[in-house]
Length: 134
Image 1 (cartoon, rainbow, N blue to C red):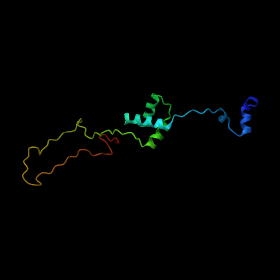
Image 2 (tube, one colour):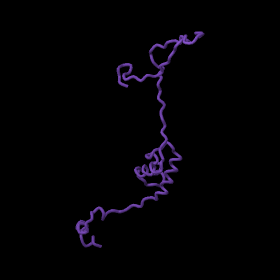
Image 3 (tube, rainbow, N blue to C red):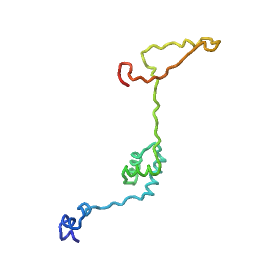
Image 4 (cartoon, one colour):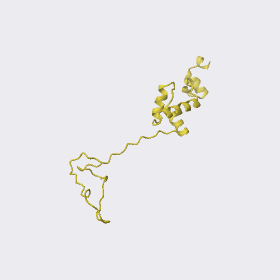
């Protein structure tokens, strides 16, 4: 072998290759068909998991896989996590402001447009109660 007679640096310069290519050891990548099946299985079991959590689930099993590869395959397969939306709470009944009584509750309505009512449940303001920006 050439590296036994000459230093690796000289041999690589003569051949026109980098030293890293001499020392490179390829790793055997898992079969993509099997990996896709494993991703599909994990995504079916955990529908709210994205590529990061799916990668961790695969690593807990027998797979040695990169998150970027899982992300690419999930994108190609059309698998996306179902997003759990948080319901925004707009009413805060725990405040010190006065509560006004319902003046129309016991009123007998006999003609149209006798009473007009409205309910302002939520108005988003730029500034809060004490001048803080929301």
